[in-house]
Structures are given as C-alpha cells and as structure tokens.
Image 1 (tube, rainbow, N blue to C red):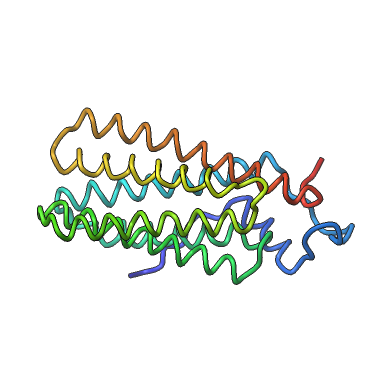
Image 2 (cartoon, rainbow, N blue to C red):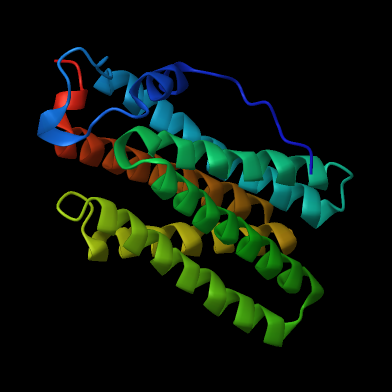
Length: 213
C-alpha cells in the first residue's frame, strides 16, 4: 500500500522537539513545553481520523467501491500517527508497539467485516474472538504505561465499547439499515472523542512538567 502523507499539525512539531528528552522530574528546564489545550485538539483529531477512515473503508467495502485500498492505506497510516503521538512520553519502542497493536486492530476489523459480508459464521466467530483479544491487549498496553490515570478495567471497558459500537455500525451498513448505521456512527464518534480526552488528561497528569502552565 502507498504511504499517505498526512497533514502535519501542532502535535508533530512538539513531538520532534521532545524526542530524546528526559521524562519525569529530571526534565531539563529549557525543554520546550507542550500546550495541553493543543494536545487535546490534536489527540481528538487523531482518534476522529481513526473512526472516520474506518467508516470510509466499511462503506467502500460494503458497496464494492474501487477506493477500498486507498482508504485502507490511509487508515493504516493513522495507526502510525497515533503511535507517534505517544513517542515523546514513552519512547520509540512504545510507539512502535502501539502502532503494531493498532494495525492488528484494523486487520482484525477487516477480517471480521469480510467474514460478515460473506456470511461465514465460523470465521466470524473466530475473527470476533481475536479482535476482542487484541482490544484487551491495547488496553493492557496503555494501562501499563500509565496505570494511575489509565486503570486497566477502565481501558478494557473503553476498548470493548469501541469495538462493540464499530461492529454494530458495520453490521447495519452491510444490512442496509441506513438510519441505524448513521446513529451508530454518531455513537462511535462521541465515544472515541471521550477516549481521546481521557488519554490527553492522563498524559497531562502523569507528565505535568512537560506542559505549559
């Protein structure tokens, strides 16, 4: 797939400035601080892109449109963008790990929706089990990075809600339930913006010296 050159915005400039900086109390006084309000905006943008391009792929796949591969490529790039967003706080290895988990999340969604369109019950069941297991892995990874502000139970519940609502959205789209499909997407969006804010709040609380006052 061709890599998408996504629009650069505030978070990436901040990321470049902070890579390699020391975390926590030992942070050097001259390290550029992050604007917490801008981080909130940028984090919301990243996660809204996550659900927007997921939906675009679902719509294209359900209708057999020729832009499926392009939509999938853009969606996969978003997973790298989200991984890169945590790099200033947790380092390169953590960013790579999160990107990998999120790309597995997207791959699992593709497998599940493909099986659902084909009506393959056995594959649907196996793909659904794997997809939810991956959701728990993402939750565990995030909680492990910030256990105080991203408790494991909360992160698991948040990921499950995201998977549940996305799956319902895809099922209604495939079934031609247009009104329900739209309603589900609104629910997916409300939930993901709440998750984005939770992540921002956790980063600010865990790394207060990195943020402008």
